[in-house]
Image 1 (cartoon, rainbow, N blue to C red):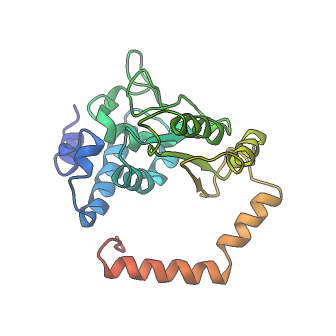
Image 2 (image 1 turned 30 degrees about the vertical axis):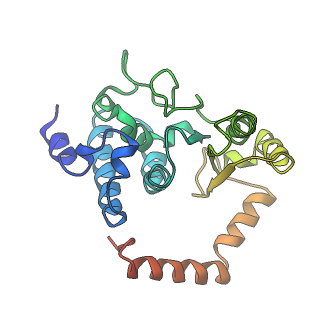
Amino acid sequence: MDPNIESVSASLLSGINSPSDLRKLSVEQLPRVCSEIREFLISHLSRHPGHFASSMGAVDLIVALHYVYNTPDDRLVWDVGHQAYAHKILTGRKEQFEHQRTLGGISGFPNPLESDADTFMAGHASNSISAALGMAIADKSTPGHESRKTVAVIGDASISGGLAFEGLNNASNHPNNLLIILNDNDMSIDSNVGALHSYLSDLTTSAGYNRIRNKMAGYFRKKGILTDQ
């Protein structure tokens, strides 16, 4: 293995082989974990190309989800599977990541055959909400699983697909323990168009939204949870 990669992983990240290991850390240590994951990804993806930008942008979100939820019992469903590299690293595939997207190596997407933490195999097809909703409804009807939580993560490009709207419509009409997270990073294969894109752009550039965002950022800085690094 490249010595640069070894030096990057020999820190907090080296002791994380499962989400339960991550949850042993303090909240104040999580920014450092995120930084180490990004360095890990840069080291590996500079040698074995993969989906770089989408995975780098989702690191903080993935760390937060695994820290807050009792994964893998609580389930994460990714709509754009190639943003889930940090998820793979935190769920026992750190040592195998060197060989991701190679013959005999791990997949570049979530794969239930690799890990119980991968609940649904998907590249991207606007289907995370519908898939996660089916899981959440099934849990409501399964004794002992009623309190199990399911999270669907979908991007601003994927949510414009018809299947995503169908999932949203059904989610509002069925009792469930489902959280839908919109990862609005203004990125897609082609330029986003349409009313939904315009609405999200107006929302994230509005003065009211940014006032609230700045106040929350100031609060987290005071608590030591957020830094300017």
